[in-house]
Length: 368
Image (cartoon, rainbow, N blue to C red):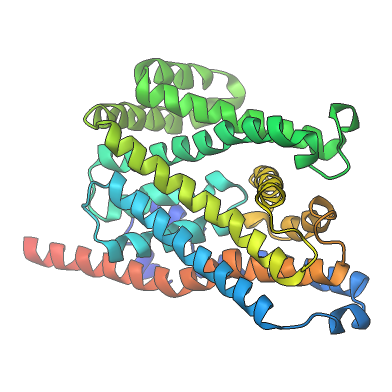
């Protein structure tokens, strides 16, 4: 992006734009390719690879996986349309979700896209209150889905839903404790946002600002004040909505996340024909995938690049026992759900920025 274009934005906006510049694709792609290459080198067996048959069965389930990917994107777009109260057209919602997903893909955690979402929605001429409502409420909705469903599935399947070798809490290893840590952390920040939106935004703001009085966090005071103000604006906005608004937003959220995990269910069925297709087996696999995502969500690498590929074989060893199948499935999964958004973002974001700049120029010319 040219410097003259960046000059059109404030310093804070420039920082956000730099976080989604297309050059940031390079790092996660290189990490992912390096790990996949290493796994292939370590695990590749020509005899196993030759056993992979691209039958009508395989193609059917891969096609179903792609269909679920499309439904997932539409579900996210539906949620955005609901939360924006129809201000955005369907086309605009689809475009903005591509940008949102891209920003998450190049950020170290699942929260990485939030700052970009604030910036992007602000450029679409939404009010501060509505922008804050959309971004903060999506965090709450996502958290409700995970925090609400995981204990239910843990009660049904036991600790083996975390990893196959964990038959009880006595078998917990580092991954088990990491999952508990990630789940608790997710529950804490989700509860904090829920409290700020629906209970007392003023108290939450006071807590955030008070917390930054600690010397270590003093430099974050302006951001704490800004988040507190956003929370207060969003809380007022939320009081206008009835139960239908919340139910619709949550159903769209649940559909999107369910499709994300069911997509991998389908890929595993495509290549591992011995995996039972009954509801209980597939539901347990779904639970394992959701557990794995909670761990990936707090990955130190952009979008979990490299981290996912390493986790995949260990977490799903009882479902995908062939190393070559494991590498092929994980690679296809990442191509569909991760690299596809990197590519789409690299195409869509520059055009979106040009559109924003053109709108600003026209507004400036009108004033003069």
